[in-house]
Length: 286
Image (cartoon, rainbow, N blue to C red; front, side, top):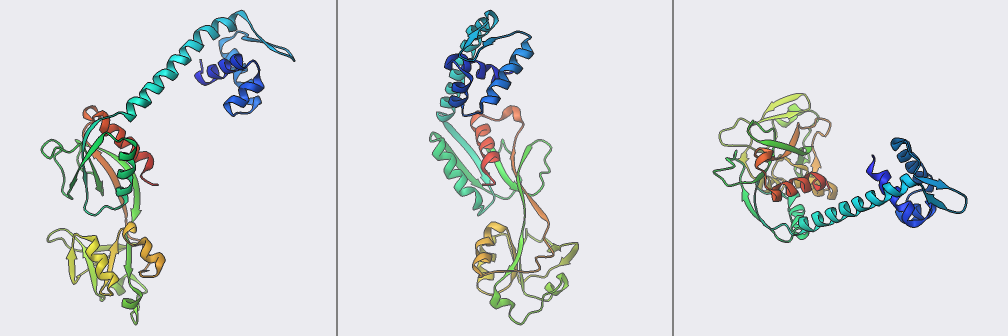
């Protein structure tokens, strides 16, 4: 039996007519009539005797109404209790983020406004985690997740932007990726890592004047007309819109990056962590 149709049937009986039930539920009268007819068809019984002036329950309709109305009331009470339980969740969650990951700051604020009794311990790190040793419940990581012992939930994908200030670009010709090689660049990297930028289908080995694992510093250098650099979109979008940055070679996009929530086996995830994961999946893109 379809529970939505049963709920509509109960509303029809309670309100005394299809039109009153439709008005109370904010749906068309035709939908109410169709769903009740579908319920009758699925049960192979007639539940209502219809006339131009009123509705009358059949014997089968009376039996169904008596039992199902109690069931719906219990279900509504259960959903209300669950909602209240969600609001009263209390405890602490240890979350790991990469450095300077601004897009999640507002989301965390909104999450704790909704769940006022949940405390969050932030652990900023780029390295691969040991969930037990580091005491981390869930981690946000950029890039592919190699661990087979962890679960990864994709939040979104994006591409870095290659940017520079208009002042830096004065007098410089950049029409293809090869033109980048001779220009002054700042690049994000790990220790002793070779710098290879993939622009469109071309790969370039870059010899930057500075290597860093800090996008804020790279943005500072570009804003001060020192170089071309690559930045995540949330580090440069506003500057592109204001004209302080120009996107370099937009027809040769950098590869996609993936943002994942990473956590241990689903069986060991706490209720608080599960609520946080679901909240992020639903709200992260906003």
